[in-house]
Image (tube, rainbow, N blue to C red; front, side, top):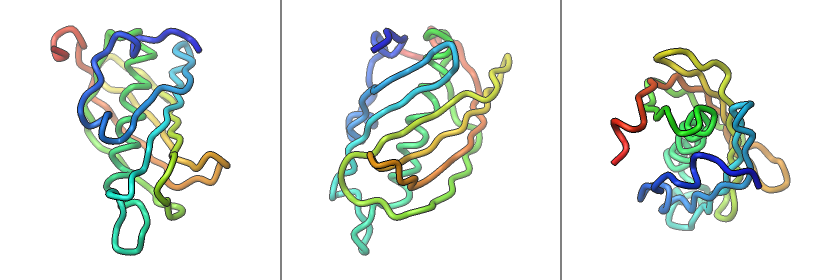
Length: 139
């Protein structure tokens, strides 16, 4: 696998909770693939992963795509995120993919999706991200 800025980036507690792990990346394209572990504790009463947990996974996929593309120089905070829930997700492995569609001076636009290992798409998202200098905000 390719070396990315994430190799030296401290993993936050929320990423640990979600079972976040880097699977693949193409920094020059602003593309990233991550793995998550959807735990039974994330389920709603129907036994499916609650939408807020899927949204958190999407957010934790799209922001790192910008960090990787900028070689660790830019950190993001989400301005807005639109999520479309397409299929119910059950506990187990979930794959997230994101790509930066536009990287400006102060704002980035990113698209993401979550899917099962067999390719079934659970949710898609688009987000606008405020860009911050990583060295100033990451401790």
